Length: 481
Image (tube, rainbow, N blue to C red; front, top):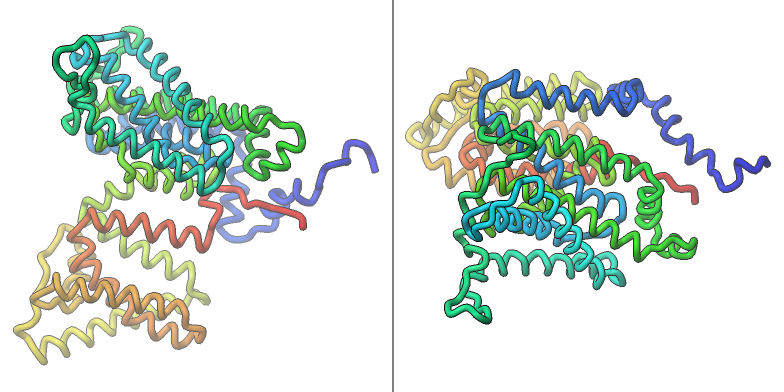
């Protein structure tokens, strides 16, 4: 055996190439397409698409959503560095985001009377963020897994409570208590982002600022991942004990991960504060932590393209769900695509659609004939397809109460259908299930977008963990036993 092959497992090394070459269908095609362009070309494509968005639309809402995607991508890249690369379960990460926002507020507002240049403020935010990362990382070095998660979660909750309650602090030398954080009212009227003679004053201006910083952080994290430090982090993630036995400075690696991740989070918090023009304790609660974790889990831990894709899904789709008409079209389209992709052979999906339509056409006349005074019709929307579905359903007078009961029944029926082994029985059971699903959507879910968005996130993550636990773009872990 030649010396260059010692310590190298060729089967593992060639796994990705063999799996791509042998893949069939749309997954294999997509995998082969992604290998056609070099990495720099993909970066250029992302930049081109980002720059083109304000040129294609003047809708401030759409541009604001695109800006939120860029902001969440920056924040998620920092968390991905800690969790995805180094394997450290940090549940206090949003506190660093808040620290960056409040430091920007202190250094760029009338609250303290300090108005530093934006560039100086950002440098200070990055440095202080990294220092706080070191402070949190130092006592957590001997912890791992659930214990590390509990300690860091406590740090995040303490930060929110302090920002809410530090409104009357007695300081030596001061006659009256001092308001340090603004409490629930936060700190408002922050200075606009201004750098090198450019001052952001519109939604489009801030969008381009966020896009530039997203690209910068993307390049920095990409090169970190491909460096010796990135390879050391991945070794630490896979087996800390083995990495320590090989002589790797695991203590220093953990501290670097905490510090760099916190620095990126602090920077994103400062950008957020500048864009919003104010900071409030509620901006940094646990709901945001869940959302950012959902982004990196959805995209795939350790995957930079996955962070971008996860940010698009977790930011754009919940905003789309605010629009009842568009949300309805996407809902039914998702059902159709899912059934076509899962039912084999293909003709079964067409037969199922026909059977569901016939089921509704038979059920509604029967119910309205038996008790015509108990049923009504839903208001028409701007979508012809959605109106057609609403006219096809039998809607009771008390649709809200019946919809709540139907939702509970739907959950139980779906669990039962997934457990059926006989394909013919399952096919028959899917007919009333799909009808009930449409009924629940039109009577309950489409009426409460906030609840629907939470359900969407939950269902999406559950399905992803079942069918693709490594995330949409995450790499499958390959081991030789």
